[in-house]
Length: 103
Image (cartoon, rainbow, N blue to C red):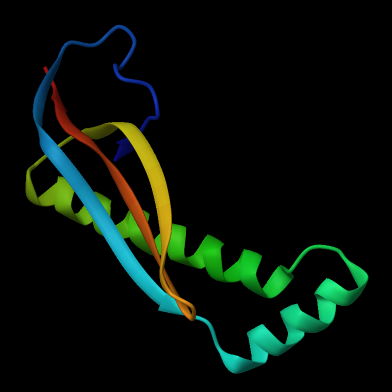
């Protein structure tokens, strides 16, 4: 499955099939919160959160691709990611784009 952030596939004619998306909601663990709090005292990257968000993006992407495959798409164009805080201890990550078939 080809995933592109651009709105077209260079040199290809495409048929738009529809919007596809994948979402995941993750909650932070007490351990990660505690370690992040300690890290904020000295500064630097919060590696536990970076890893958690990378995992969340990968899972959201996988779910988006599965939705596109169910539509028999060849690619997803205009891929975007978003995130939001649902409450103080949970965040949503969404991957979305347009499923297309290459003609």
